Length: 109
Image (cartoon, rainbow, N blue to C red; front, side, top):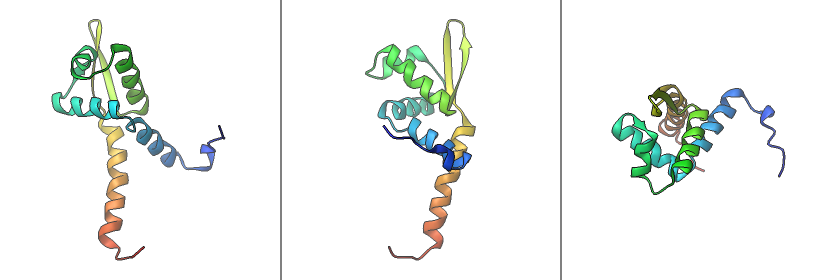
């Protein structure tokens, strides 16, 4: 596999790529959708909601947390997860910039 050459891109570009990669798996999208629906969730609840094993869900939660899209608080012997607004603000800004481009430009490609 080749070198990614991430050092040639800005910190913001690399950060957005990490966020996009984190939501690039259907299980992670399902986890985020569940967290939106319930506002917070304990990992064990996700096992009942998704057709995945607990270790698999834990790995997906870890990826989402490392990307900054969710955060977790320890509650007894479980971790309660919720969305991390700061991570989604970066994604929102990116798509708002794209939307602005489409609404202000009359270019044909």
